[in-house]
Amino acid sequence: MRRIFGLVVLALLLAACGSREFSAPRNLDDACDIVRERPQYLRAMRAAERRWGVPVPVQMATIHAESRFIGNARTPHRYALGVIPLGRQSSAYGYSQALDGTWDEYVRETGQRRARRENIRDATDFMGWYMNHTRARNGVALTDARNQYLAYHEGHAGFARGSYNSKAWLLRVADGVAARAAIYDQQLRACRV
Image 1: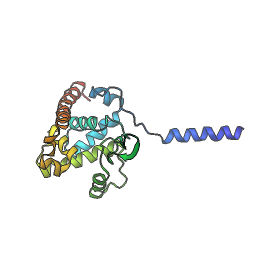
Image 2: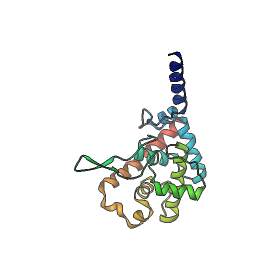
Image 3: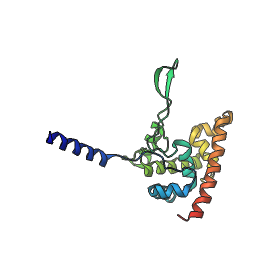
């Protein structure tokens, strides 16, 4: 009995050491609250900003729109006839909601073989890499949160075709991303982080 109890305690301790925090910060409407609660987010975003030039507020607003800062976020399941599971809507995963193929391209191009989508540092680095490709391929400024988000969501070719123009809901989301980036920018300046 004592041995079983010891093994259970050991297993719980090992599980606790290996766990990660995937839940969202408590107040997603205040950038200062987010970085006070999760300072590693700001460190990761500043590193991506230094490497790729994408401003922290643009990264924050994009992550908010994509995953609400949930590290292991996935797209919902699809169902046939409302009950037969068909799998997930896409392979999007993690903070950045990067698709499998795009993530693989990032890993190949940057050599970040150990990068993981549920790691905030890797996710923000991915976003910086992707948004730089958007600037190079589509001429979108790194400070243009709205159009960077549209290209992020639709892909570079879809953005170039203007596929977003037939999606009123996506245009509303992109406008929200731009507004949130501006608010986050003001908040971060005021709290001097």
